[in-house]
Image (cartoon, rainbow over all chains, first blue to last red; front, side, top):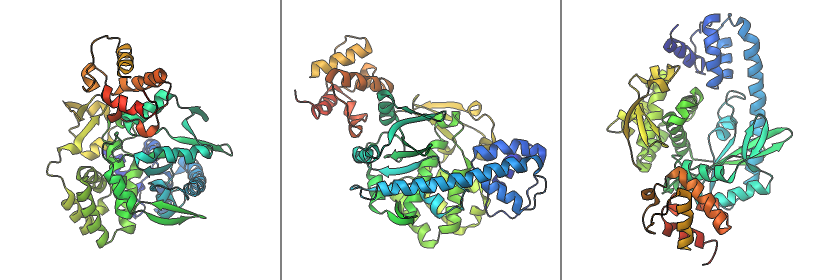
Length: 359
Length: 76
């Protein structure tokens, strides 16, 4: 079975609405197993295989079930962490919003179907000091968890991350032998910001939803989807992520697919289209939403979705196959179609130098 | 303060060439990676620690912008 066919199978396995039988055998199973883990779709895949009467799980049954149970447990821990961090920010006197997994795990996915390594919070850059104070006053420290141990970030690492990637080094706190990780975000394109007007707008229309005994402040639905698209685009089109093979994880497309399938109505499509055009983030959103249709064809059958794509489509779409190296200030491109690119075992080997750029 | 800032840049770049206080430091070979070292060196020189809110490319683009940033922490 070639890589593309294998990935088509992977897409079906990751589709919570899939009703087709999935032919899982030892040969495809061996190759799929790693992909299922790397793409963070173990639980949905396991349920899909069971639901569609797959009798050939054989040797894969036990490890898949073990991972499935582990993800359910991890999701419970994630929920507890989200609730804990929500409470820390309850009295914050600056605008903020919890992003991505915090809302998705607690309000969209079944327990274990989506996990997250950290709690992401969006703030304005000018409020980093205040957010940092909340966290450090409550025992968080900036650094890295390596081989199960915490290592404090050096001054150079803190400056490097802030100056060149528009990110702060994650905050960690050890509780009962596990680490709670909080990531402070203040940039929508993950570059040092010159203008954070989009973030200010996003943070001016947040919504509040319950999580356990706490209140989760998150982005309004349109802004939430836009943020997912911006995040997906950035990681999918940056060489650093391609090299680490973290550029195209299926769970990110799955987030969009399920959100549109479960939550989108006609007024939402109109608002989303208008907001994307208002922010001028057509390239990023079109990339994510168009490529989501390559993976989940059911999206193509939604007339409102197709109309949305037409409304936000940039005039020039050559950029869809471009990968940027911010460090080298170079742009590379690939020449295969997106699904072959997704399926490629060595994406870096398929990159062709295109041009230099200046900011 | 300007002279001290220029000295830090020259030492870091291992180059004694004149530096125009108003010119973008990229013109002197201080790229985004070198700026990380520059900030660490400036903190050592002036005995300060920049707040995260102040750590961005704009605040460290020229000798003048660096002087403005450092002025928040110490008076001349």
